[in-house]
Length: 122
Image 1: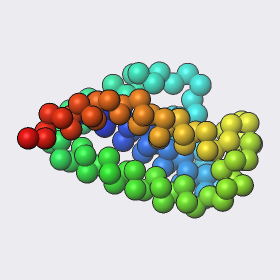
Image 2: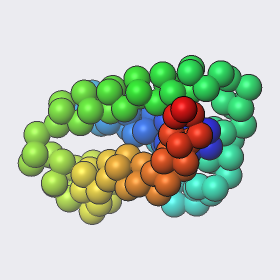
Image 3: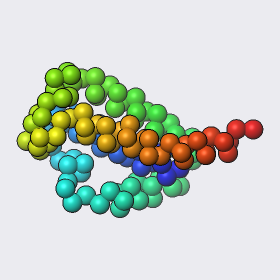
Image 4: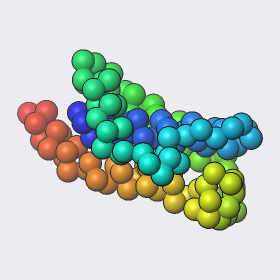
């Protein structure tokens, strides 16, 4: 379950970042903290979900991923690829943050998903 809760947490933070950027609200995302301890952050997300039933964790993952796709769709290609879209992003284009926090992070945990699938299939 570790892979799913850390992915859900990171994608949830990405959704918040996209939402605040789109609306011009103050950007306070932990994703932009250069001192962020990613392992400690992942451990907190896993600890928060460890007592939750698997079905709820999986449902959260699916819901967060769907919401992430919706939020990304609110940005034009130009905005996604623009370096310096917001001062807090520095020269990092938005697509790169999305990549690191979503599909690249999911890829890191893909093997765990495959193992889990094998365990539950009769």
